[in-house]
Length: 121
Image (cartoon, rainbow, N blue to C red; front, top):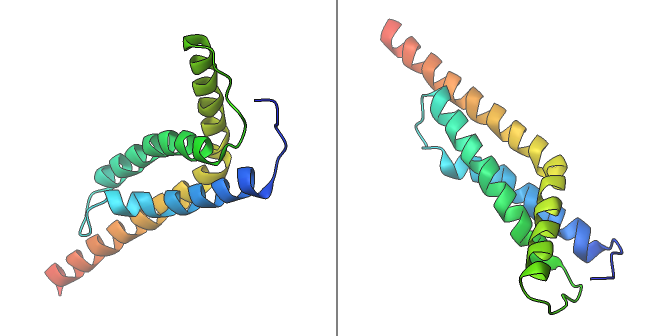
C-alpha cells in the first residue's frame, strides 16, 4: 500500500460513480406516491448510511495498491483505510444527497397541494 498517487481511475471515476448513486438511491428508497416528509427523511437517512458503506466498497474496488499479507492487524488497517475514504467522500455525495432530499420534499408538498385542491375544488 505504498502507491498513493491520485489518478483518474482511483479518484475521479469513484467520485462520479458515488455522485450518481447518491442521486438515484433516495428516489429508489422512497415510495412513488409518498405524502409524508417523515418517510422522505427516513429514506434519505437510510440512503446516507448505505452511501457510507457503498463508498467504502467503491473505493476498495478501484484501489490498485497491493495489500500486504499479515493477518488480522493488516486487515483492520485496510478496513480503516476504506472507512476513512468513505467519510471523505461525503464531501462529494453529501450535497448531491441533499439536493435529492430537497427534490423529494418538493414532490411531497406538490402532492399535498394537489390533494388539497381536489378536496376544495
